[in-house]
Image: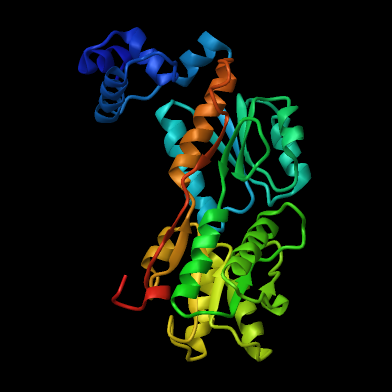
Length: 334
């Protein structure tokens, strides 16, 4: 028998109206009541009835999620986190791997044929002004996105921490995988953050070690980039990769070539994915607050769909930090 809102209300010792307000993320509910309702929902496995909601509100309960590439572990884990947070609100998520293509991103913002209440978009092709003028309520995900409704990640402090850590552990010639000539792209922003951090640490940046791997940031591209550097005879003692997949590909090449990690070459990725945590050696990585980003994005989109006024600060940056592991500390140390 399906669990009802009344069942949740009885378990949490609140009214059904309070349950409804919690499910729809209305403000002005005491933290204690909100916690009791969420615990009861989790315990009982309560789910909203989408058909009933559509009849009541005129909305479908379906949102779109546009991500550049689901083959990349970070985006896959971000999608999982969005699905989790949206599911708690009874929302269904339609995932669209946009490839970072501007036309596909615009199509999603226009509703992709109808049936969407709103859109979450990790935009590479469209700008914040276009998202703000979209036909549907929209929230942007990504790095240092423009003011407006967005769940932002600012990785610059963690890039600086990564460079400082490499210098502290004796590394001076750092290769960067994922350098991108496209102004404003994540690769370009992170590479500029690397330049600033290297300068602050007194390092000379060798432009030949800043590698553009192309639009796809996968393991194959990371392995091939590391192989090109080694075949060219370019000396480097560390790799800072702009995502974990690139770093894991570079790790494979390093080990295949007989290099010791981290003694001969240290590696740092970004995304703090499960793959990074279970690699051998485990990969030092920049954690980007994936669950926090997802939760913030879903909450902001729910506000926009419900027509609630903006919260105090709609541009929220998730906590970002450097997770140290064996690829920079040594096997058995982390």
